[in-house]
Image (cartoon, rainbow over all chains, first blue to last red; front, side, top):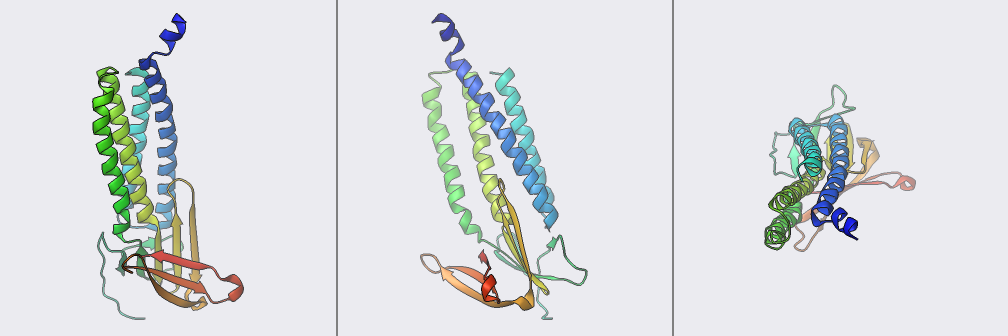
Length: 73
Length: 161
């Protein structure tokens, strides 16, 4: 029982939850970036560069959030 | 070919002679009109974002008494990021769901940021009916529908504007 209590503290649950959700976020943002790159090649507008750049920044932030969930929490 | 004056801005749903090129564009092909949903259709997304932010604000009062400051900070950053990604997805979906009319063909790009990208293109002589159908509470939105003339292949391109 004591082992379970130490394993499943609120802190640990937040850490695992944060890691899992931020990993899902990495998948989601990468998919988003790939789709944006794909459609940018099909329809070329003036703002495609900005849209791709923001999507890429979102991928980076999601990776940072994943690392933060593991090492910071 | 009609001489159309350039008329477009970020918040226009119908842009005349826009600065848009596409993949299979021929050398002598000119984009005459681009159509996308009116920016007013993004209001629900912005409204949801505001509601999310209010929720996060009040959630802080509850969770700050239960968990450490570090975890509260992480949860806040995570939720703010989540809300921003949600809003961004809606904006990009709106931006790339576009219909183009050129002097040679009509193109409809159906795009979802997570799942699919579908491009329908048809040469202009094949298109017979172009109709504007008013919809909405005050009939303020228009749906432009164009059908292929062959009855057995009655596909439609519909662009909300």
